[in-house]
Image (cartoon, rainbow, N blue to C red; front, side):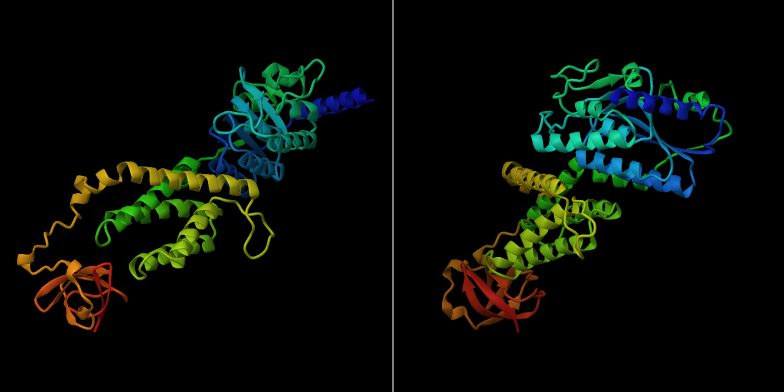
Length: 449
C-alpha cells in the first residue's frame, strides 16, 4: 500500500511539472542569492527579497543557494519565511546545500541542482565541528521530517540527512549520514532536474518573455548585514568595554569615549533596524551607563548603583542579540536557544576585553597615543603642593579656590597651599569657591560654596 501511494505521488508530481512545459505561467521572476553562512544576515536577505518580490507582484521566487550551513535558528526562520511565501519558491543549488542549506532547500516547492552540486549532511554541530547533544539533533530531525512532508518528499530520507540512525533499503545503511549527488537526489525525488544555470532551467520549461528581477542589496544593507555578524558583534562589545576602561584611566572625555560610543552605535543600530534590538533594550543600556557614571564619579566605592549599572549594560547587550517570541506581552520573551547563544557571545567578548586589559593595559596606557592625554605636571612643594598624607580634621570647614575643573577630581588652593580634592556633589568649575566637607583616603572632599 505504501509503495502504491509513493508511486501515485511520484507520477502526479511528474505530471504537474510536465504541465509547465509549453506554458508561460511566470511572467515576473525574482531571484536572490544565499551564498554565505546561514546567520542573521541571511535571514535579513531572505526577508528583504520576499518583501521586494511581493511588492513587484512576482509570479515566481528562485533562491540561488550555495552554503555549507550555519545557525539552526536562522535556518528555521528562513524555512518559515519560504513556506509562507505568497508565490511558488524554487531552489537552485549552485554548488552546496549542506546542513542548514539542505533544510532551507526542503522548504522550497521545487529543487533544481547544478552539475556537481550536493545536498544533505544536516547534523547539528558546534563551532568546533563537533556533534551536539540529542536535544538539538531531535529538533532538527523533526523539522526536516515536517518540512519534507509538507512539500511531498520522503521524510525518512530527510531525517537520515541529520543523523546516521536510520537504515533505508537502497538508500543508506545505518551509520552513514545522507548526502546526495544530483543524480541521487533526482532518483529519490529530492531534485526536479539538473541544469547548468537558471536561464537553462527556465528555457527547459519554455518560459518565454519573462522579466527577471535580481535582488540587489543597497550599500546600507551590506553595512547592516556586516555589523550583524556574530563575530563582529563580539568585537564591538569588546570595544565598548575597552573604551569605558581606558576612559576611566584618562582625564576628561576623549578618544576612549569616542571609541565606546561609536562601538555602541554600530552594535545597536543594525540590530534595531533588523527588529532584534527594541527601543527599551537600548534605553536599558543607556541607563546602565548612566548608573556606572554616577557610581564612579559621585559615589565613593562600588556599591548597589554600580552593580545595577553593570547588570543593565550586560542584559541590554544580551537581549539586543535575541529575537523575541511574538505575542508574549508588552515586553516579549526571548527565544531560549537564541538567549543562550547571546549570553555566551557577550560573556566571551567581555572576557576577551578583560584579557586584553590584563595583558596590554599597562603598555597601552604608556603608549604614544595615551601619552598625549597623560597628566605630566610634577606637583612639587616649591610650587605650593602639600602631600595629602599630612591632612588633619582641622581642614574640614575651610574654604579655598578650585585651581582646575573638578570632574570630580582636581586641585584646589587653600591658604596658598595646593591640595588634591574630590567634588562630592556634581562637577565644580575652575575658579569656584569650595568648602572642605570631609577627608577620604587622604583626599579632601569638597563642595561648591
